[in-house]
Amino acid sequence: MSNKCNVVYPYIPNSVPEVKKAMLDELGMNSVEDIYKEIPERLRFKGEMNIPAPIHSEARLQRHVEDILSKNKNCKSYISFLGGGTWNHYVPAVCDTIGGRDEILTSYVGEAFSDHGKFQILFESESMLGDLTGFDACNTPTYDWANALAITSRMASRTTGRKEILVSEAIGPQRKLVNENYCKPDITVKEIKFDYENMCLDLEDLRSKISEDTACVYFENPNYLGFIETQYEEIVKIAHEKGALVAVGVDPTSLGILEAPGSFGADYALGELQPLGIHMSFGGGLGGFIACRDEEKFVAEYPSLLFGVLPTVKEGEYGFGQVAFERTSYGSREKGKDFIGTCAALHGMIAAVYLALMGPQGMKDLGNGILQRVAYAKNELSKIEGIKIYDGCNFKEFVVNFDGLGKSVKEINKALFEKNIFGGIDLTVDFPALGNSALYAVTEMLTKDDIDSLVKAFREM
Image (tube, helix red, strand yellow):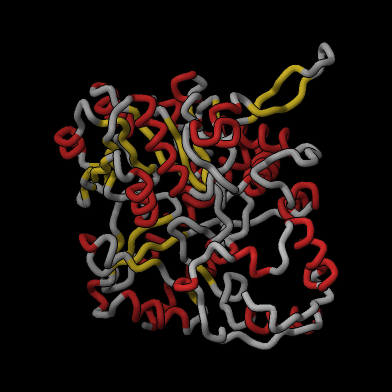
């Protein structure tokens, strides 16, 4: 907050003194300090920050940052079995090409400062996600899957007028925490037990906990542990008999081969866009979606932007515009359905490119390819003495137990790392019932040789 060091960076125009002064004059301020004057002195940092001296050359700065980034180990040089919400999927070149165009890359929540087709791309994205999930309506992207779950919980509460959400024990731990935090203070979130013998939701526990106060029942298919929920029709029946809604968390890459939530009676489908042509970006390439039936009681509760096909002033022509804009906090401010801010509209557009490129057959082939790789990996690992594979129907992810090896997951992952392999996610804290276990993910990026390398590493271990 000090003006002691007046550095001019040739690659940052706003650091030029004349430009700074012009901006301050426009704001009616004398110095940058005026911007921060409302922050109390007691909250201000008084010392010197331990940061490097400025690098004035853009070329040298780029080299400096690249040297730092080169210390990271990535999925190009390592074989990765990590998943849990961000997966190593293939990103077609066309996704980067279109997503990197200036008129697309700079879009802010899909708003049309200069449209250039953004409205249509988001409409197409919503339409294709609706096709995948078996629903009619879908929103522009939320921050991520966790945010989509939290928003859905509040949507269901407003629709039903009830204040209780039931969620499966076997959902993503981070999603669980975000949902609980977002529902505070007026909505109660309760867990439904997971049956670790049959690897599916405990229906008796669901029946004992669901009540006239339950707004929504949420489960994932496949769940966080990779198991496919085979009792989905019974879960929907139990929930609907009590007047509760049903939300299903989905991995979109599974919907080319698994039944769509809309077709088995669910009320919402939500999930993560990252597998649809979006780079992992060190865990940041995320965007959530929420799909539902095109009924007013559901659609009216969306806080997100929705895009539809609308007639133009010229008869016979159509354009793409926002639907029921007054629902949002943009249109009604504090009277909006819920608050939304900057979201992942760009990722929604890239997902549209990916889905259009893949088509129905492509998504089916993708799903089948992942199933085959998972089956091969489970079969080969189960042959190793000391390793146990939790049996069940799995998609993309499965649980590997190491109780018989006498090594912790941390020790195993360290040994794998030395062989250029990223091991699975340690489950010992979030899922203690599974013992000394890890979650392994297998995508279309892994070859038979990659899986064989993992098996060989375990045998040597």
